[in-house]
Length: 286
Image (cartoon, rainbow, N blue to C red; front, side, top):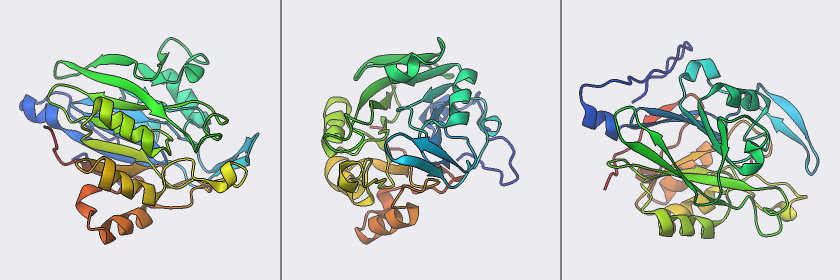
């Protein structure tokens, strides 16, 4: 398991290991805050949707403003070095001002074409089901596949802009799905059908909602939708919820999803993290 020092020192993961097979099988996830997680997979360090601003407000043309209520558990320096950043889209609660600056400092960023055109050569746009390969420190490659995401119901996701998710695969590694801001169970079914079986699903949850968007419909997964994913679509996957803290427009939280899964008898299927916490994800390699 990753060691998180409450005193604020760097999160460290050895990049050279005498037990190469054990090293390759390692999957750790650290929640930095909101949608921002650090994924250590086979020695490769990946950050999702970087949000490093302190609490503040952001003007928004549709919903008036977004309010960030808490800063990240770690600074970019504390989680360095990072090899890859995955950006699902450019809303401030997924890519805030500090997050945008952070993209200039990392070797590889994969994101939507709309985000990529605003940055340099290290930020690469991907189409749905496009594939890239990244070398692993212990040999071989990690394959990153861009997958669809619908940010709200029909009529909303088309309005508020393109989003993508990602699937991470490699020989001898668990298949990891990073949903991005997706609220569509049909999309998750499609990803499972095309690229599954999914072993670990990092799902963006929190039940965000605005009355001016789809009459208050959820624009990512709610806790209840996440439970349905676990029961019906990805019953063999370990579920890791993110995007459930640090923003005022989130209507649900980690405590609620933990209780919901416990009441359903599925507490062993979910790993619920608070910002600053890390977990070694159970080995579900086929």
